[in-house]
Figure 1 (cartoon, rainbow, N blue to C red):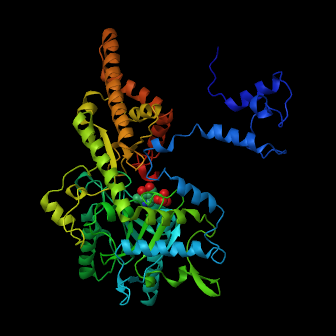
Figure 2 (cartoon, protein in one colour):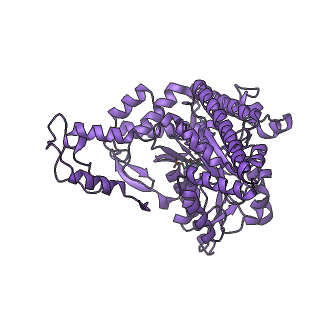
Length: 563
Ligand SMILES: Cc1ncc(COP(=O)(O)O)c(C=O)c1O
């Protein structure tokens, strides 16, 4: 028998079905056509209608092959909605957030959320003398996620820089923006899509795999439109130091007269930091921070499809980005990359604000961080793993003094989380040095593949350029990862690493019986296992890597594209 190189399963199945004898069935029969005699169309819309019930059944079956969202530990995106949220979502499923006239309550709810977030992030305010209520002059909008929010924030920086340059009679040809190489792909997309030079600042182990702040000054010039600072690195969950960066930019202003403004990408940290690390200063309380984005669908805990962007003062959003629409007899301003989009996630956000309150969000994040620290400490103690993320590491009194500088009236002392380094409830880890040195034939990717077999989705990725030689596994500890489930994960991690070590030992034993176990054997076993673990992709990645002249990070799977 000649083994064919590739079999197209669909084509072969189609041929066999076509040639087989079958009972003729119609769609209204108990056992319908799609059940056993006809393939469900994939690429061409069928000529005839079919029973909704049958189609529901097939879609439901096919989608059952997807990973289970609760066990998807790769994503920051919330996967749990309660019964009331589901009800609100279904009841408002068809409401379009762009229809201002038609859905005034929905639009009002959006505006309330913007104000709530502005207050949470300490936007400058006046106090109403009668009611004592805070009056902010901020401006913001709901978006489809942090990505759209980042595009808008970046555009505002670019347009403001252009306005200033034009007023000074200077060139607007070559704008640039600063961000660390650990930036999520959305930040890079902004630079590419809107023709802004991306000045990527390296990360390194000394800077905690975050922006190397010593490289900021040398990258700033008169064409710098701003800097993106990341509150919650996608790779490790650690927070970039907003206050320190702001101070560096103060020095730049003194030395070069350049007023460089900050946009904070708080995709996840925008929700986690205010509740879990209330004494950490990072938001509008830092004068240089002009705008912040966050994802309602991550730690804002709505269903997927919601982000927010807020400017602390309405003057920071240039006129060119605003469009006026007639609205209930008045004029309403709109800004955003999309027009029509679902309105119900905004309703879920407001529901969360009211039902959780600050108390609820704090308790939820306390739980997530506590579970994340447990997992980190377990992995560390097991000696099989090194933990790269920092939220389980104690903050020394000096560090606490430097980090937690915000005065919070009702909270005079630091919280439990603040006795540790700040960050998202994320555990980034890798095989320990001992395991890597002793068993170089075991690819880390295989660990991820075997966990997947047990249901858990824990990706294995390379760190970004400058540290691409480091592979990490990452678990995002969301509210849905309860202690009971975490216990299962811990057991499975242990079983799998022990299985891998045992298997490596037995293969070595077999080899040493036949011939001397050589270095060549070790790397062959490694490559074979890696190829299996990566679903055959690894040799292709390797080839790409060679073809692209070993450009750092190009051929490797990176966290940048994850959410
Ligand atoms: C730091 C950071 N910024 C931006 C994004 C993009 O967010 P979204 O998926 O809401 O567009 C992510 C996604 O994980 C992220 O982690």
